[in-house]
Image 1 (cartoon, helix red, strand yellow):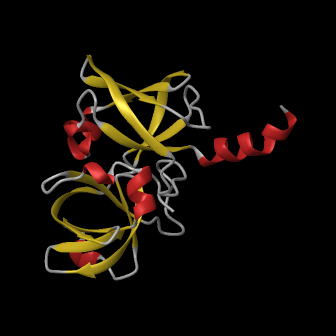
Image 2 (cartoon, rainbow, N blue to C red):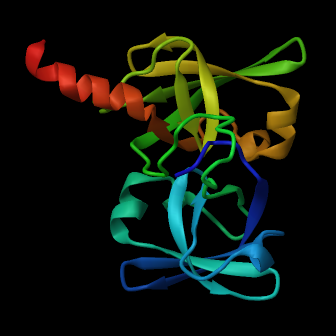
Length: 195
């Protein structure tokens, strides 16, 4: 389980295909603190550490993960938001994030607004919705929804988040991973038979 508060940004140093699997080597200051079998959120995708080198570590993504996330667009040099699993007893500064991506969205627009940025994203074919002032995870970052429409939402990004996550690399048309709020998903699932 994660909080959506990004610890650092890692850089893809190598991608290796093996059958339908993709082995991803990431350069990160976290590498020496990790252990084999630990879960780490990569742009919101929970992946297990399978190897550790001096300044890099390796995770493996299977076909289903590649099909449902933006991992297939990653290249050598791509910057990836990283968060280690939450420690029991720590403050939950973001919101409850599972690291299970619900789908992909595209950046529709970026508006500069008095020292911050408003990012608008479009998504298709999702059974889930956003609500204004509710939580959404974009590339692993816990955010508050500013505007919510069917298949579209906006978030406000403060300078700290812009500078310390890969939001600084997102352009119009960029694909991002989405994880909708787990509480909203459970409520929708429980209420659907009665609607």
